[in-house]
Length: 439
Image (tube, rainbow, N blue to C red; front, side, top):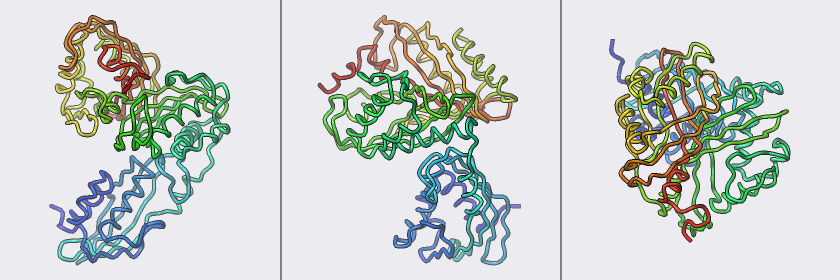
């Protein structure tokens, strides 16, 4: 039996507004006379009604970037719809109820009563189980556990966002090793602070939001989005006052409860393109795909198989490994690719530019339903690259971090990637080296 209009309105609110952040739908779903009798703590009260409604999903999504609500049941009687939903998320973003990011995966329930008038929600009673949620966030992780390691890295990123670099003294070892330092950065904790200050001086409002965080053994890997306003000189580029965003992947090693080593790839080329100092063109972002995940060993074997096969030119294997509804997410502003064949065609554009393209897997980290891959990609530039760069004959080499979201089905659901595209274009001679950009 088809759902009633009232139930469809509530479902759209949950699945589109809360889960996907489509706030522009709020005026279609809510009456301008809407009253929330049980707004959560911290919700603003002095904004226009539609903005006030939008602040609640913003609050949850700000603290829990991957928040997802599942409707368990809806009961309709007259103008009223009673609902029961379950929320699941990882606390990776901003503080929630005064609690700094914990990296903890949480689940909570919510019961609500919604009254509709003229087809729109006009009244609401009910609250999520904030007490149970708070208890989960406040639970003390045992030292040395994966929960403790995730919490450590979540705090690391939060202190970076707050530009409280002196806090590193508490949870970063003095002899910290950065495997991907910025030019001139020396080993150690103090030079690490200086590197972050170089970014915050150029982007005073810089903020990194993890969208996924996984841990295995002594390794923790996170994927996310960085944004900031270019207010100070950066790599010789004078301030542009542009608000930009770029993607990045971070891998850390934890030793005795402190961060001891780090690797990073981020979309520096996209960053420079937004600042107007690099040529525009196709750019890799994140992607979504499908893989056998019966056990961590099976997942790792599948990862190695994917690269072994494609390294030998057998790209058609991706038809087996990618889901029929595969979506290759591109950087914001670029069109997504849909279906395995679209991804295969994209991969072939790289192979056509470098017939000996090869990816050497150096490390695989498996989480509950995710996998992160670190490796080195090499090749010889023998063909036109992305329609931008004619053949140079140069041997190319660059670090790559890939981040895959896997399902427990027969194939992987999603694959995300961060590659050192700035280094690649520098090796091709398209982008000048660090220190000479804008100079």
